[in-house]
Amino acid sequence: QSVLTQPPSASGTPGQRVAVSCSGSSSNIGSNTVTWYQQFPGTAPKLLIYNNNQRPSGVPGRFSGSKSGTSASLAISGLQSEDEADYYCAAWDDSLDGAVFGGGTKLTVL
Amino acid sequence: QVQLVQSGAEVKKPGSSVRVSCKTSGYTFTSYLINWVRQAPGQGLEWMAIINPSDGRTWYAQRLQGRLTVTRDRSTGTVYMDLSSLKSEDTAIYYCARLGAYREFDPWGQGTLVTVSS
Image (spheres, rainbow over the protein chains, first blue to last red):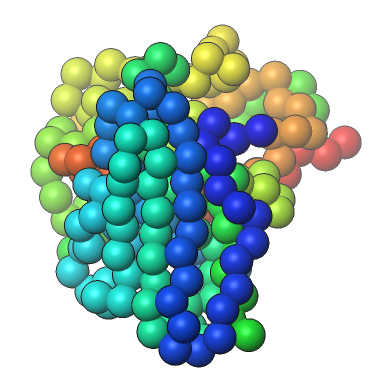
């Protein structure tokens, strides 16, 4: 049971816009920044979004993040087949004094 | 470039211990905290611990307290993760990751598969 709640799956067709939600509480998302990671099978997670909505260099502008209250969202516009991967949200939790993750969302490009 | 390179896969018996190393390069070792995160087969990510390489202070996930020890060697820029009293549920890929200014994990090591089986 993950501390942050994500839908287990999401899907879209090429060119579509897809959003992945992440729900937490006042001790994590409500009081700390949200980070998103992308993971392909057999590889380590890769930083996708940090500080709620910032993209590291090299991450396409099609990826965007937002946060409101105790929830966050990752949006992918102009969906491409290479976006098919697992996506995880994360935040620091002040009560647990450590990082917490969502259970991950498997994105399928139809 | 910044790199975190981990030691190779391990197979361990239940009740034994395992050590995984994470060798850093490309930056000042004492300037960034290092985390350990694990991922059981087909499962999500679980944060385990964090170490400050500058003074060696550590913070552990409560459920792993007492079994987990994280240390560092400043002379080689390497962080070590020791997990004892291994159980089958500890079978996972273990990752080290550097902590950024906004508490983001970046970059990650390549991962080390630890299999616990009798």
